[in-house]
Length: 216
Image 1 (cartoon, rainbow, N blue to C red):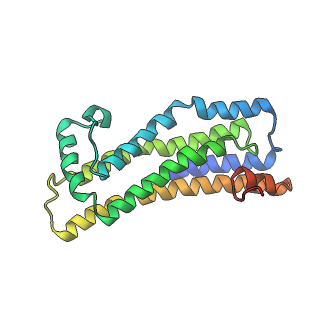
Image 2 (cartoon, rainbow, N blue to C red):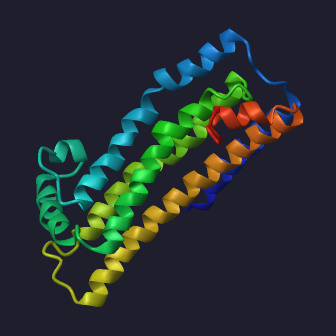
Image 3 (cartoon, rainbow, N blue to C red):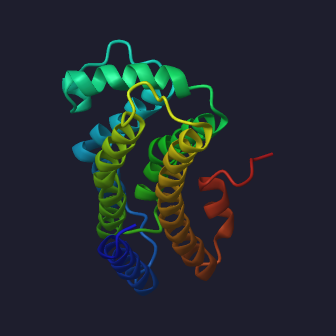
């Protein structure tokens, strides 16, 4: 991950964490509406999710119905992707990569909305959280393009076993780093909410909200 990218994320976290310790819990209806609107009306973060789905399809050998225009690549590269994805889809590392991409999608579709609407955060903090995840998603297109270019260097994937493994393992490691960054950011923000609940003596509400245990 680029140094400037790390600095931006760290700065956003430090600002959000500082504000969190300086303010009381937010519970009014108006603020809740603002937080919900942040998620439901934010256009960029949901549209960029499509890039993960496209990459999963490409690694699954199932790109029927996709066009070069939709992928942002030319037809020649799309044909190469179709040829190669069918050859590599059964590799264990590719399966692990697809699973990791699925976990990334789960964080954005299931977990990030909870953070945005967490009453421990003010609307301003929720906006900073959304911005932090949006920064990561801005990298998604570059990641997808790089992976597609990597697997189509050799259009027929005609390389020796070591070279083939190195390419596939390189894809896995790229996605793994991306996943690690997202998990780190999510866990840091979740911990900030936990600490706020701890200070207020209300860990039970925190646990119920994040479904850490079920009601009896």
